[in-house]
Image (cartoon, rainbow, N blue to C red; front, side, top):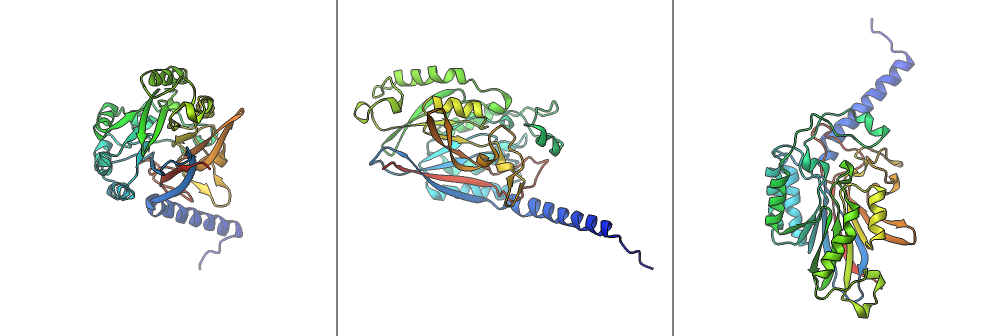
Amino acid sequence: MATRLTPVARIALAIGAAGAAAFAYGSLVERTRFTLRRADVAVLPPGSKPIKVLHLTDLHMAPWQRDKQDWVRGLAGLEPDLIVDTGDNLGHERGIEGIRRAFEPFRGVPGVFVNGSNDYFGPALKNPFTYFVGPSKHMARSKPLDIDELHGYFADLGWQDLDNTAASLDVRGTHFEFFGVDDPHKGYDRLDLITAAIDDLRAEDPLGDETWPDEASAAERRPTVTVGVAHAPYQRVLNSFVNHGAQLIFAGHTHGGQVCVPGFGALVTNCDIPRSQVKGLSVWRHGLRSAFLNVSAGLGTSIYAPVRFACPPEATLLTLVPTE
């Protein structure tokens, strides 16, 4: 004779089945549903040519992830004018093999990059519920990765390292001043070095000036856009970037929450940024200043947490256009 389930048991069984189905979808389907997000940002001086910026982040690459590598390679067909990489490229001690295969078509495209924590250390198994009590902590069993090899490859591509320093580029007739920090999630950021780095940059620029871009008139300087770059969008970093004159900020790290609830959004951010700005394009305000902020949900996950839900992996193509 078959045993009849109680109402409570039937509810528990239904919840368990729904949870298993959601996990299967998030792990087998959505985790590899790579998406290109597009947006226009009006930050260029009037009359400037549009500039396509490809923002890549949080690939957490393992050598066997060929679908991800192929999808990233295909982004070269967008013909970006500039690449911004906000870190966590590696997800395995041999992750550089996948990064080389994914990024090789971008050789010759100017780019800038900063480090994320997983460019220094490999992934480790963690209790996912610890993310609800605050940002993740370093695990002593995390294996060091060969960040020098990663930096060497990026330098070979022609990309500039912005970790706690500044650099400049000319792209399609617009002069860009970049500054960035090493991974804030690990506390490697040195915001105190940014002012000196920009001063040194401008001292070496024969066409530059000695004032912040928004403090000089158009007649006193050449068309310039100031950009801040960081891996993790902690508020202290965003506030400092805005104070230093950033008009546009790039960041990653959050994975967009990675597991989201439809209609509610991200459950966690893994830093102190508000949940409403955990991914996508928004405006970050501090005092009387503001900057556009693009936080990418990124393209990967830890190999120990291979699931996304209501938050597909993404790259971003920002088209910078002139202000009116």
